[in-house]
Image 1 (tube, rainbow, N blue to C red):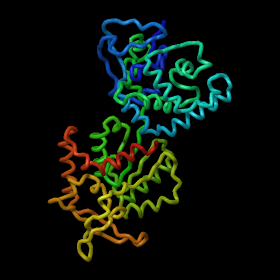
Image 2 (image 1 turned 135 degrees about the horizontal axis):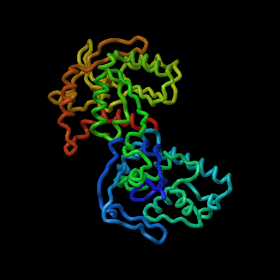
Image 3 (image 1 turned 90 degrees about the horizontal axis):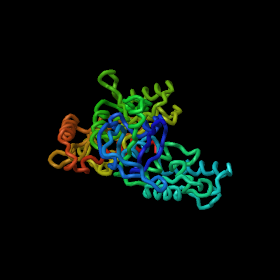
Length: 396
């Protein structure tokens, strides 16, 4: 008879597959740690109505599945480029092809749109019904029931994102592989088959990588394993803006296919080096960024030949220390000042460096060590999270 696997989104099954499962879908939304084996009452998941009958139930089932939440799975898809705009464009292209094929009556409806698609799949999921009927050609609802909420020619990634976008973010996403594992159709450790193309992050220095990794681990633990940061210690990699430019050029020349983010400080030295990349044709998988501007850095104390003067230091002295939180860069409720260190003639700008870097870094490491989700003061993480949010949304 064979065995079946199914992906449940808010208790609604899709991707029904006999004697196998969609490994590419697993790699899109799950990590190895998401695979679980546990026991529960068979009615622990809401029952699904097939036509006019409910599926039979037993007392206990031992489940072997990948499991996460709607929000986490959606975030992971977005990390690699899924978005409303892309999903809509993909839907419109797919529907255009369906109309040109002229097979389905419903496709001629001028009101058929991406918004109608979203509202229809939302209604189907909430109904908890799987109806396979004769209206597959005449009605959009019947067609989507038959095709498990997807349409022909639609991207798996963007179709899945669309489904996740219409359900409760706290809802459960579970890929049940119990029957095909017990039936011997696949290996008992499917998590080992997960294939993730990690996003490579290049920074100017090891502390940049250290602090960004800390932010990811604390605020985006479900995304941290998708990033790979340069190992400065083992490779004895030289850390500065100039070296980062050479590394970017090396990756361009090597033709590496991974997504790559090159992060520069928001200062004059970085701006000077980035100018050296103007003649380099960067492929779509490589993005070069500077840390974003900080609103309170527009009026910041600096030390120069004429003494202390407040000015906008965005683009002039924005090292990673400036992004570690106001609680780290203030002493006695006063900003630790910027020291001007040199003049860059080609840009007609000065380069600045914040004083007491070691003290600032120590305070941040202490903050990380004592982190408590229930007592977190977000205003002291805003700047670091602005960098991480930029990374997470880069390919949307």
